[in-house]
Amino acid sequence: MTNNPSIQIMPLASSDYEAWLSLWRNYLKFYQTSLPRSTTEIAWRNLLDSSVPIYGFGAWKDDTLVGITHVVLHPNTWNSTECCYLEDLYVDESVRGQGIGCALIENVYDFANKKNCNRVYWTTQEGNTTARTLYDKLATKTDRVQYRNNL
Image (tube, rainbow, N blue to C red):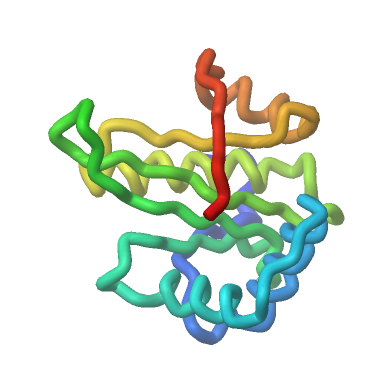
């Protein structure tokens, strides 16, 4: 999975809340946005609720949570199996370039395979060149353009 044996990828657990929250806030800050506290609390609950098809994984290095990813499984009209949407991915700035992002994405691939998903997909900002350099190594960039109307 990763060339760095000191990295462990595991599902997030309730005891990880404080460390997750710190990374989550940094992730939102990176994207220059904020969310109401209630939205963050609901997101955390959903990550831990086995009846909700949202999953969270963490990357630990030396027993410290240094990266997170959240995925959503959903049906689609183009296949008979679900898709896996990699919605969020964040690695602490202090440990970037050490294979943690790669390990998180490869963990998502493994998870999606075990869930019999037909694909893993995600979006990122066009100007997020550091992340895109990694993504270009792990996936195929499509020609899709995203449109959005916030309600």
